[in-house]
Amino acid sequence: MKKRSLKIMSVVLAGVMTTGMILGGCSAGGDKENGGNKEASKELNLWMHNGQAFVDETKKLAENYEKETGVKINIQTFPYDAMSQKMKAAFTAGNEPDIMQVFGAWIPTYMNQKLLAEVPEELSANFETDYLQGAVDGYAKDGTYYGVPIEMNVEYGLFYNREDAAAAGVPDGPKTFDDVMKIAKNSAKFNGDVQEYGGLEFYNGDNFAALFLSWIMQNGGDFWNEDQTKFVLTSPEAKEAWQKLVDLVTVEKVTDTKHITAKMPTEQYFFANKAAQLVKGSWASAVGDDLENENWKYVFMPPVKGDIPYFTVESGWGYVVSENSKNKDTAWDFVKYCMEPENAKEFNLGTGTVASLKAIIDDEGYQSDERNVRVSDQYQYLQYARSVGPVQDMDFVKKTLLDTFTKAASGSIGTDEALEEMETSINNHIQELLKQAK
Image (cartoon, rainbow, N blue to C red; front, side, top):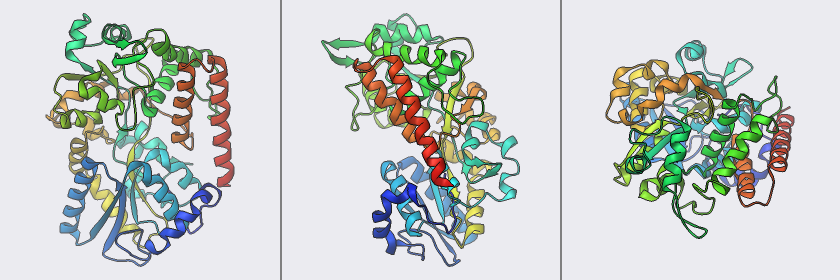
């Protein structure tokens, strides 16, 4: 998530300096509609994305906290795609809010620039024992934590249509990758080059990256060198994983790269009864609820090779506090309140997210709750999660992987060239960000 100090983010944020100036009157002086409070007060400003379930649950916590403490939490929301840029501009202008509910992939830059407050010892002391490792890894730098995860971002689940599974001879749902392919190949339908019904939907940055990096591990490889200073995508294991994914489009023809759009993302496509299977995190079940689709089940994605489904996770949503806030103690007290097990459990159930606290994961009431029971298959596999590591900018990694996959699926780039190009581009980007942080 983010870090803080009085130091202005320089090279990384240069591209948003203009926006930062526009927001200059917005805040750190206590404007409720914008950034943080420079003067200590009985109010805190919190920024978050506008996902409705997240907003609803966060507002409940804020209202209850105000009743107990008298401290008002002013919440401002932004679309996911806009929030990252808003944050960069606000930090540049020095008017960021006290608290931000942010996605873990955004954090490394802010940690490197020392813009985030350290998590107090009373909160972080038991992180390694109380939280799932895949949830907290991305919030740490050099042994210090700069954020508190409210979920673990698992994108390696599989939704499937029950009727399609039965028609493919897999009535009890896919238990192996061969089962996944049976359903996919039996269900996919094309009219010439136009997909009419998908067999296996995964054309999305989050899910493509989850498959590719996880399959490297399941093939027996690693996507980092030994000291995690360079991304490794040219190994035999990476080549095998990449080719398998390309073949799903070009050889097996269980999906394509043309039918998914910003207005029709993969989860909307699946729950609109346009596909047999969807690779996605359990949070997408809320889309099924919205579309009143009950003809699905959810399992953990079977491994492409071997018996152990090693899978990658990136740090999901969590709370960070500005180093420049005059209300740090109160801000962290609110975060502590949000992470009390009963409060955190209700948040996770209400948002359909995987809890970051082990005590909640082990809570029978959590797994058997009617809001959660349909996606509870995944909890037995969380032990195999592995953090994506110090990529510095996971959004860049995901975009690079998906853009290159699109070219590969169209035949405009070969496997070896694609892997070399991605490896070079990602490593150059990592080094540039690290250099800017010095």
